[in-house]
Image (cartoon, rainbow, N blue to C red; front, side, top):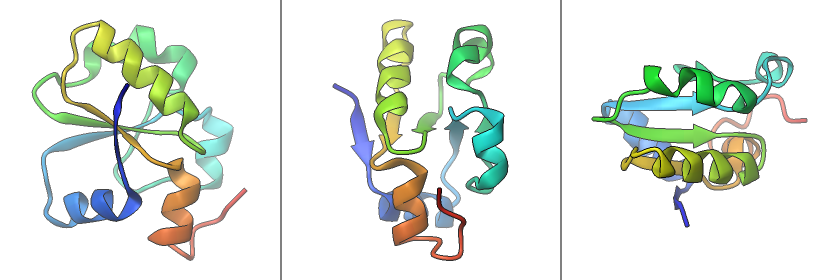
Length: 106
């Protein structure tokens, strides 16, 4: 099972300017609706093609709409040898509810 972090924990990590990679797994049409600043656009279907572009020495935070795709993607990356992978619990929807209340929700 993948480790999950809350939206508040991610907010604190970003405020501390921790060295992490924020990976948004949603398709580009969803990312155009709303996204967390600084996130990389890597739709889940494209993850196998782009996983080698992800840093193995940084914490990788996987983000999707509600959390299920990020858990699947984290399990995939861990199976490929990535050890520092966490998921945003509740996805971008929880981020919008708990952190960025001005963010568009869908």
